[in-house]
Length: 343
Ligand code: FES
Ligand SMILES: [Fe+2]
Image (tube, rainbow, N blue to C red; front, top):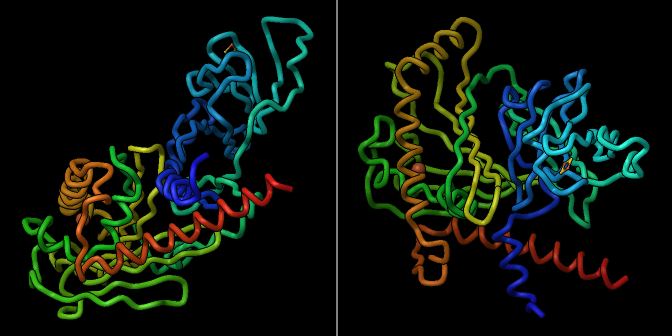
């Protein structure tokens, strides 16, 4: 039997349940073609029915296990490419076209997942024993405020999601890893950090500088989801508006696969928003991809068990706090699962 500590560590590595995770851009989920992906190591498939509502079920054909995402959409349901079995958005077999009056018809065969759509992204809820139904999803406040405009950029990285989160909780890497970049090259290379509790999470900040570079990062931890945000001073030459705010969500796809979702936001309205969007696309987008590539290459290069040998120092306050939050939440989930299975 696996001991409790190992189970908790495994849960943290797989990803917490009871969370909303972004899985795709809204435009990627279509009425005419299924979208296959993975979340917490499980394959899922998404599509839209005739009304545009998003459906999400396990990517596994109830007949023999073929990926449904290789199939086709028929009248709002998904048809398997292998032998044609048709499954609806609740995971119920609707039709077995190859076999008249087949007993599989009408059977609930697959799990389905709740979904929602915000600011150009599709989110999927992964249920937990404590929260089988999705709790209200607390969004970043910029998503519901018209004063903010932005772009969503996503990427898949071949590393455990924890590295992507650790990286976001670590402002000091900015002036080293990204020292050559257009917006992150400023500021001193030595500092102390401080950690402060906030209403919904924590903020880790550099003591020696504010408003110069990637000086702080803040995590919000809510009952159904976690995200972070940080500000980067914006070069005047790149258009109107205030600071550049990055809002980050990290979705664990599998043990060594992570999808990162970064919204690049600015407070700009009306005409200024249009002109910023144009200038961003023309001048800034590539430089931000370059920065993300630096992060990707670094994180993918680290061994997956680096944690066993690392030697943290003062600057890793945010990393430690984040791990504590994940570990506590994982322990709570495992306790509840054990209790539920004993009942
Ligand atoms: S495996 Fe899907 S129909 Fe046979
Ligand atoms: Fe970075």
